[in-house]
Length: 301
Figure 1 (cartoon, one colour):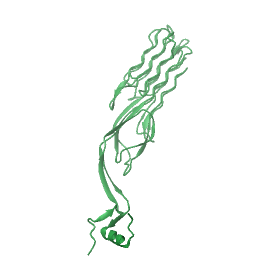
Figure 2: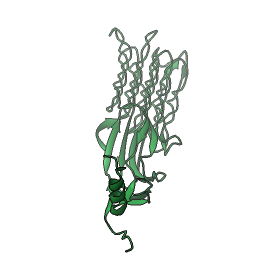
Figure 3: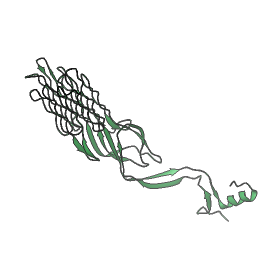
């Protein structure tokens, strides 16, 4: 009698077995870089929010750092991971250093070849330098008989920084934020940082600009983690941007360094979907083979 292949087997088949299922949705928030994040099996489409690191603030009545760039995207395709999870690099941008002249924040992105990239916030500068470009631009500064404008923001990710002026006194502009541009200095007061904004996938306000500084008062940091510019006699450096908001650092004053920019954030949603794949596994026997091995004393327990 011919052996039936419709049942009566022990073990798992040496022939390919089809497996299907559904996956997602799943939301993951990253406050630090994960170089090998494994997506759910079968994930081919994601949504994400990227917040880059904020720019650092400068000193000497200069400008505040710009807020980190913000990039929101939906239904972004990734390669089919097949049977097993597909690993991607998730980079969370760090804040730029504060100092005599601040430095730009670093970008945030997903995948080794970025599926879009949020640009780090521009540096707040000193002397006669314009604010640095970035996701949002850093604030400009002033010195001597010169003034400098704010740095340019990246379209869709942030806004320009405010300008500094030397007359009637030296004062710097605020860094730009995702929600609004940084303000120019007002007389002897540093310009406030631009407002941050919300992002769709998680609560909170992000990417506010750092405040500029001046001989009377430092500018306030923008809502969304921006650090305040230093007010003379306060005994403090420029305010640091808040971590994981992408806020820009506030400016310092003469020989007092500006604050560091705040680190960024990444939020990733793996969309609901389905998967189907073949697994090639070995070790399946018919009942006839099992009986023969048992009869011969060769079947292992």
